[in-house]
View 1 (spheres, rainbow, N blue to C red):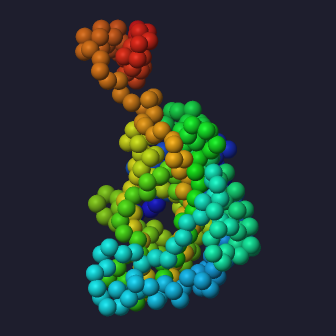
View 2 (view 1 turned 30 degrees about the vertical axis):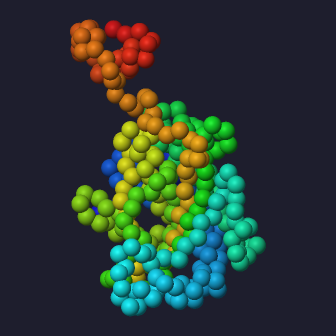
View 3 (view 1 turned 45 degrees about the vertical axis):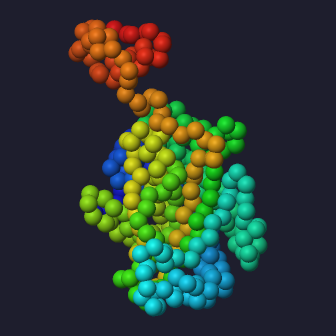
Length: 308
């Protein structure tokens, strides 16, 4: 099963329409896709991964293999409620906590901040393209996610390592779930697999990212905002016996006070009299139904401007 690939290098050319259609289909039918030619500095991305791997080896690896999780696996006790992962979370927007995380080097903090600044441009561009594909104003998702103070969406990164696992058949790296938020942008391992998404009744293995492609999936609140048109898909991580896997997942999410609901433009009309609809239908029978539905919404909302 071939995962959709969105080539940002063709967005400004004569193939823009094709790329937009491919993105719309990926959001509607898949809920995940790869982004290539995103203009994020590949050397910067490699540096982020290198520094995170070093941080894990020096600060987290030993304690993980001595943890209760590792002991339960070793004793083959119940492992259905644990995840074989070592992870921490960095907030970037609206406020950063990166300097409060123990033992992060200044180089790692600075490199991560530079990477997030570049990645945020990609996240905002994706939010604009998704809004456009949904027939909304291009800043609709960003404004909705920004909440009442309009300071911008919340942005944070889950930094995870899925350590080499001696008994991968007994535990999950990360149990099945959907993501709660908005747009998730993943910089992942280029060698060790493990990420799987559920599609059409079976698990689809997401291969390691080549050439630093960014893997993207949509969260629960994009599904709500799009009135179910775009999908939030169940996924999981499987551990590996032969190596550890790095995962740097950045979340472009609503702030806490953001009011989330389906975009009104995407809703069907409701609570109208059938006789009113028939009256409109009589004069618009051979036209498109979309404008008819929009007219009914306007009437229900008190605008009373049924258009023939």
